[in-house]
Length: 171
Image (cartoon, rainbow, N blue to C red; front, top):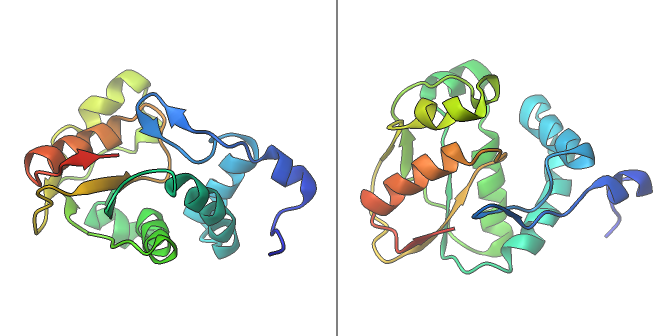
């Protein structure tokens, strides 16, 4: 179909495959950063539509059976009235014909990772996740977040999925 981006913006949307051990779809800079910010902070659905294309292409290369979104704390949900990661996971689950499982819970309100130095981020999210319901025994999980910089949030959540949820593999 027709692209929602002009040629200059399409050229500026940089594919990104890995951030250390973390799989990524786009680089969080230039057009990619603007799209994420418009979707995440302004609630623009057209930005999500553009992001979905990049995510779908990338995720078709991975082997997983269920999508688990990184949850927001209930106080943040009340304050911001939106959960962009859940919205992204839901749309991806439909496009990829895979289930989404809301099994993770944020057990305590943490400081915003973007306000912290890289060396503070891991401690900030340590112990802030638990399994809400169900079990993922033997299941290969795609753990989804909207932005990954140091990977601290994803690492903390993956540890809980492996130990409490008994996931076979977490991507």
